[in-house]
Length: 350
Image 1 (cartoon, rainbow, N blue to C red):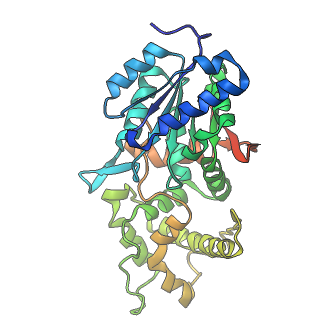
Image 2: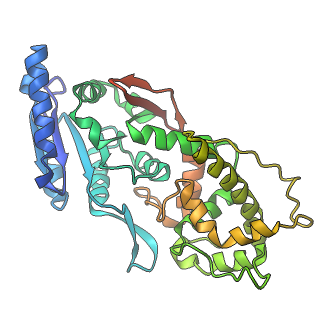
Image 3: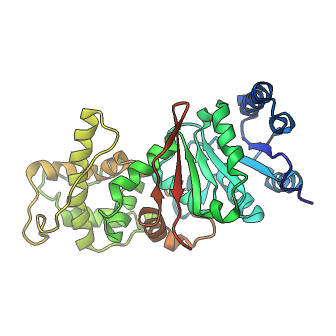
């Protein structure tokens, strides 16, 4: 039986590494809030930890202690893997698989947050998590902050309709998703987006194209990209591949400039008339850069392996990320809480 909604929420930390004492740190912060505020809510709040490997037990625990803030700590360095390590479909890591199962069983309006431990999470990963029903993504380093715990507590009081429409990003995840949307929204076609994701998933740093022989052209690159279709799922046309080669080289140039200048994000423009597919010839420098397209795609912050969206057919993953992620999500300006950015993401309409 679920506890009454007026009952003080509990915090459940789903963590594959209990030795890190993350639950203890949160418990200490809650105790400090109880001492300083004199608020009985904090004094009554329970903070517990469980392992993601026992998902059924975790779900039963959540059902017993509702309302509950569930923090799924991502202890893995890679968030998904290929079937058999060689080909799609992609499979989420244990921590995320546990989080997805919690959302499936408890409901998308529940307060389930994914908590990356460092900055290896990408904006595309965040899209997959939010589209899978996560309440938000919270930087692990911020959980020792009382003001952030207050924010999460306040969010539990929102109606289900508000929770479905708006999600929370705390700390670095806010910047990562915002930068990705700035870079892609209203700038790429679906085919360009699909190929950029495929390039980032190609495991080698350089494509096997001989630049010295003069064979490093768009057609050769397109053929090399298609060789990896079992890992990427990409079967695009040569025309699309040639188009994106030009786009990516343009982005890469602006990215390099912004990194030198120390800017947090960058702007680029693409004029299709400027790059006529029949007439445009790449410069010698651009031809030398062609084998490095996978590296450039990853420099843009795209993941080396896509994270599946809960319940979505694998063949629809990239199109769903574009339709409901790139074009459907909108990041609101953040509110700084003790120097930590806290922003809301408006989700696409169902």
